[in-house]
Image (tube, rainbow, N blue to C red):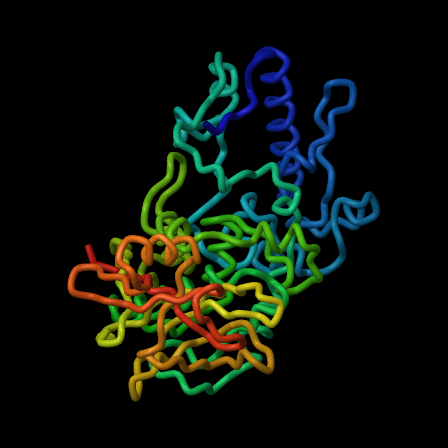
Length: 405
């Protein structure tokens, strides 16, 4: 259960809530829009909330006094929200890195009257804890690895680092994820761009649905994750926090939450002009099982397993571009000598499964062959004949389809 904190001491907390609202309204009245609205940037001084950290603001007036007081920095960049190119995951407006209008920060206090403009009466009406049922334990806005503002302007440089690869269905400009663990949202971004173009017949002539803008929206708004490692050196806890299950992200992309639209509907509005947006459509994902005779129809997000010399298995999300000469041709975002931007794996190779699953399979059937309907796969693991320094795929893969409404 996920709780919002305007209760227990209702009068005091409502007063704090009203004070925070007053502060942001005052800033807006004097021409300052604060784009890093999170609890870390609210100080309580003798019970009175004080707004701090003006590193991410839009200042419309150009008054020199604001710069002298430390409210704003010099330069036209800080008079246009999209030019900030920075945000805190989970606390970002879409306009901070594009001109889209698909999402503005969700305001939990307005949960019952979300469309009303005046939020002060809503604060006064709250009499108990506001709870969201069935919230995911994988998602927590209190995590210190999440609540750091990050620059997104360097993403384009990383995207174009490796170009013109031997890829036919997905983009030839391969993003280097560097020291991050963001391979899952990167792969989902690739599939979504394919679906936008091929399912909806959309031509992104204005470059509002680029890899960097979709990835930024996924990691800053749709399923917030630290972007450390793409443009700054992360610590280990930050990269561990970035790990997420592919199905969780696909569920968030294609389904509504208690407070927000589907992730796809947010991304669809990256271009703020409705006539230039992709068609209204429903996002669907499907799980398929890879096997020796699998027939390719559209790109898939797949999980690779790689046995390191220290007997540890390294897992990595990649995108299946096509099958050619009985080989899987994969777009890879983790560059090194052993992991080039394009990886080929023979289709006849065994597929990876965790050792415990294979042990149970052998106990039940006497061998390591798994049958799912008419499909059969030989399974291996680090304890079952897996070669070092060689890629193997897990049998489950996923596709994304956009169905016009």
